[in-house]
Amino acid sequence: MDDKAHFPQVNPVSVGLSGKCPRCGQGKLFHGFLSVKKSCSACGLDFAFADSGDGPAVFVIMLVGFVIVGLVLFVELSFQPPIWLHLILWLPLTVVLAAAVLRPLKGLMIALQFKHKAEEGRLDEAGGK
Image 1 (cartoon, rainbow, N blue to C red):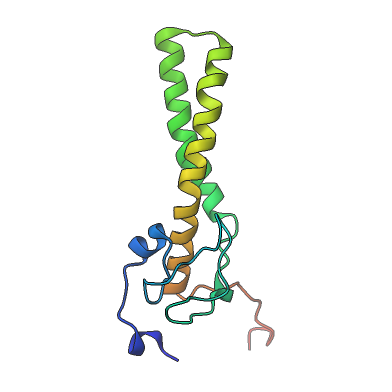
Image 2: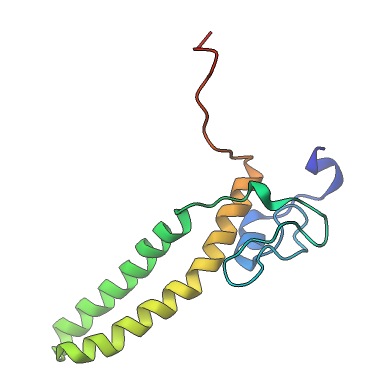
């Protein structure tokens, strides 16, 4: 079944970041915080293909780490607060930012995976013939 014949093309960035179905853009992608549903309630797309792996976590580490380290350096060089103040400021902020960014990035990676029909790599069993 060719998806393009039955469903209008949706923007993978907008549907991914909003946690919607990558095929129809209507149904919800997630059940709970990070658990992917079995299928779309609107169009019936089976989400068995959805395996974002560690990709979203890597992007969260890079994005949130960049922001937090920049802020920590700015505060340390400007005000030189005691270490306990750093812990009170940056640990909760890191957790909140990571939690806020993880779900949209996971949705984005799944939507891009669907759009580009990305699959797990397999070795050629024919021996290259």
